[in-house]
Length: 226
Image (cartoon, rainbow, N blue to C red; front, side, top):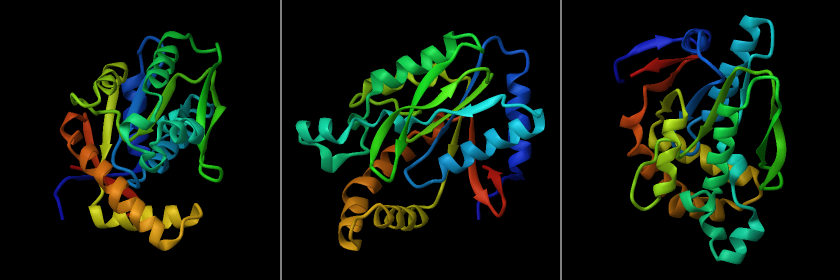
């Protein structure tokens, strides 16, 4: 097992609140990591802890997955089978909405899309950020900075802090298999998707780990800071 300091979800949320205190405008936290790492669970947990401690809705989650291109767009481009790879997202739209979150004063609503895993499509306006002063965005490619996908490199500079959630590859593989089967794929089709697409994406995302401000691993009910 790797060394590191174990910390609770409440302690991680307190870290975010300290960072956000005195910050002009909204504080943007990014949580990056490979597919199946548990990013959305961590993001929601941090949001809920922040809101509980404050006794008010001071935080919200704005997921990157809402910027998936639609299945119709992917099918028309001939890349539906590669859904989830960096070029299958509306990167420009994601960047524009991150800037809107940063530049819009709390109290003025900003609409944000989410992703529905039941219909496998983005949902416009799934979240509305209004009076919240802390926004947590989570996704695979927040730290991506390579020549093949240059647009993604602009994400990091819009975030005030970015964490990386690290998970062993075998755990990711099992989680993704279960996710795809729950989503309607046969076990064989699910394994094909995991091996030919998801794990390739995971390798790419793992190469961005060193760019994070904080690297976390799940440890019991809490997390371990590597």
